[in-house]
Image (cartoon, rainbow, N blue to C red; front, side):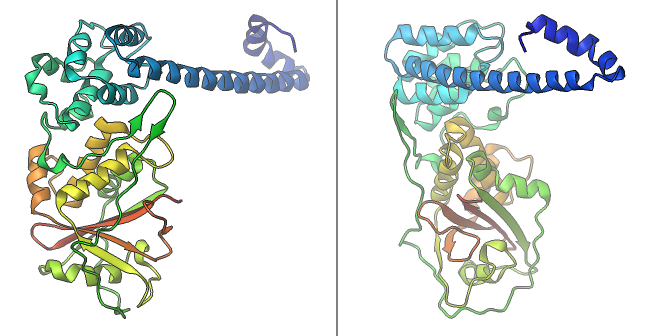
Length: 369
């Protein structure tokens, strides 16, 4: 059909019902088919434009110098909304990787009455914090958390890097290439593998995770696009000593250990809280099969998963969560249960014994569906 867009729209809105009532439904259907073709073509063109835009933005973000940064910010301030189509999380990550904080703070703090730099600013703030920058040395960054578009989830995070956040891994990116570090393998240190054959008697403990709690525990792998993740929470009537946890986990009613034989591989290690944070941060920020949530939101979702695993109160501040996490006993495990795909860097399980030793929370993540 060679109808102009105006003729096409005029028919679709003002003539279709009349033609159908007159028994000419075929022309209505033909135009509907034409419209689907136009939509598909427009979507393909949009994807091409988005890919081209992403490359141009990457060039500007990575190219050294004041001019490239100025032109990059011009894109944001002239866009139709706060970073529309410009992937502020990704741009903030690139800027923090390739430029000094002192070179960024001034230009990013320029007047922006429409708030189009808000998302870029607040993401960049946390990218810099993760890289050890003392943002309090740059007073202008105080305004970066005062977003125009209402409360922002990143405001919950602290303006300092916690001792839990010292094992940070970042991708290494150039204009036309990227290198992503691998995941975390089970260490030889702190191993507590239960002896085999293990008991096949199932524990009487029952999963008590609510939907909200489940979603919070798995927030890090969900943000990272992992293939599948699950969470379970068990409460005991009496205290569970940490040395009982390795033997107890394979007996719990969890899909991630279902079908595990008495002698099948089940390996577990006790790990410090900062290593668990690092594992969750890499899970969320780098992701599997795509770019993940990047540093700022990777930081947020690592903390949220930690908070839920450690039984921190739902309304706890970041500082309160940090204290709770430090009081929790952490375990990292792997197994040959069918739930896991058993590929290196593509599976893990985390178990958390709460400070009162009456609650065991488990997160299992795998790269496959």
